[in-house]
Length: 440
Image (tube, rainbow, N blue to C red; front, side, top):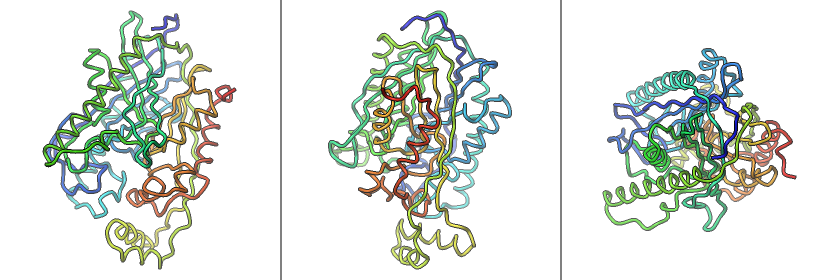
């Protein structure tokens, strides 16, 4: 650990958010029934940095597939009302595990079929409970602050693989931020990796945190009384490489193999975190400052009503999506032409800049930002604040495919994004990051 005199107030807390009742799980549209049990309990965790008179920042991490924008905004308002922490200082991140409960309006068309009123009532119930748990979690972290040294460094993990192109781009970096109390004991650790939490397949219907959940578990086993937080980088087009390995025959054998792989990936990340904890790290002596901006990302030309009808006749996922939009038109609802996209940053003086991009962001954004900014002082995160769909780069948008637009039907979006979305996001990043972080 790099020793320094500056101590910063840091609070952490965690809460078990595993439902004690069956519920539909999000992430895989092939699932058609409620959950069948629990492989691993799932958690939400909170991290607050700064004292009451220091304009503190607060991060909540949730083991869930995705947090809707309106859910995060409602939570932010509730937390600000009780703590005074402003929106630009609060961020909510999700691990994107595909083995966690559905939330209301999160990938609303994922099943390409209507959910029964009873199942929707359960989803609504869990969504309300989660909001209440997260509010209480934030308050607990604030009450548990203690003076800490902050240090960080960047490691590397290798299990992410580009799922669009063999040998395609990935981001294997593993930024690690550690919090050590005044006595020199590790208090908390936060790490981020750019890879889907999809080691477990849609054929399984149990609650689990996937590799991120097992990574947190392994870190906390190695360091009792330490809170481990995992967030996800720009891994929208990256899967665990084990997804590409041959699978044995038999449903149970496949499940057990995939579960072993999820644990294997979790251990690999935890081992790299432990390695980074033993290395000399860079001190952070400045309190973080938050910045928050929104940008409207336009959709491509909307289908005409006749085109919607043609799509509806196809049936399946495309037909369901089209019929829903025809129903909206019939009810007099306007079809969206864009989305409001949040971009957020925390900057620790000139020492470190952390970017939080919303939803499923492809790797090109991270690789580009690390060229435009000083990569040694930059941490690029995604899967934060909102879950409107895949955010493609210009390259991926032109190539098409699932991440380039095909997945939009599962999020209930009318069509793919228009050209130029990448630049709009990058320009907004430049608004929230000080120029002193630009590459020389």
